[in-house]
Length: 82
Image 1 (cartoon, helix red, strand yellow):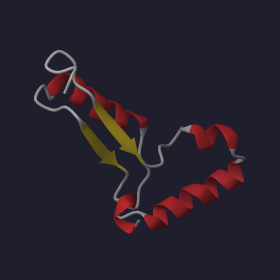
Image 2 (tube, one colour; image 1 turned 90 degrees about the horizontal axis):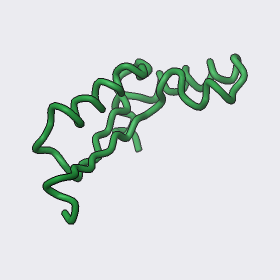
Image 3 (cartoon, helix red, strand yellow; image 1 turned 45 degrees about the vertical axis):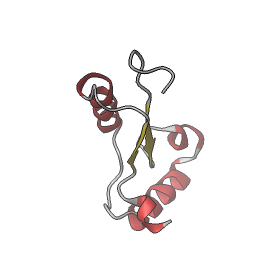
């Protein structure tokens, strides 16, 4: 509230994103196992792509001037099983 109306603050809470940190630190076999586990434990059996997260970030920054103080989940429904 102290920063408004000049600065808006929103966050994106992603699930597993293809090309993210796990792909840089896990061996191929382990990475495949992690990805398969995500596919089995999300409401939408798919993996997020970087361009999808970028599109949401663009929306929040450029096309949603009335939105602030929000955390937007983008996790293919993984949070529904928490």
